[in-house]
Image 1 (tube, rainbow, N blue to C red):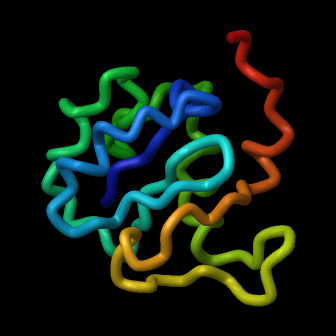
Image 2 (image 1 turned 120 degrees about the vertical axis):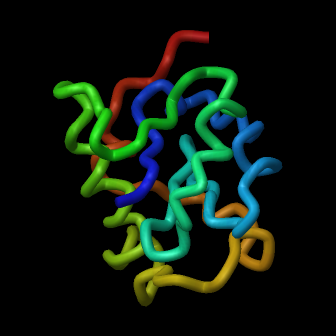
Image 3 (image 1 turned 60 degrees about the horizontal axis):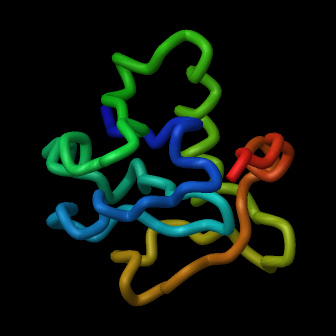
Length: 114
C-alpha cells in the first residue's frame, strides 16, 4: 500500500508534503507531484501536510480518481516523453530535482484556471 497524489495537485504542486516526507519519495513533474510507490514507507506524514488535500492513502482514493494510483506508479515505471529510460527508484527526489515532465494522463488534463 502507498499514498497517492490526486488531481487537486495538478497545476498547483504546492510542495508542503515534500518537507514532511522522511524518505524523500515525492518527486516533481512538470505540473504535479508524484509519490514513488517503491520508496514510500506508508508513514502518512505527507497527507496532513498537504494544504490542497491532494494526498490519499490508496484505499481511500475517490472513485473518480482511481486512475491516479496507476498513474503515480507509471511516472516511475514507464519511459516518459523526452526521457530515454524510466525514472525507477533513484533513492530520493532531492538528488533528482524537478523532472519537468508528466505522465500522459496529467499532461492531457485541462489547465487549472489561475
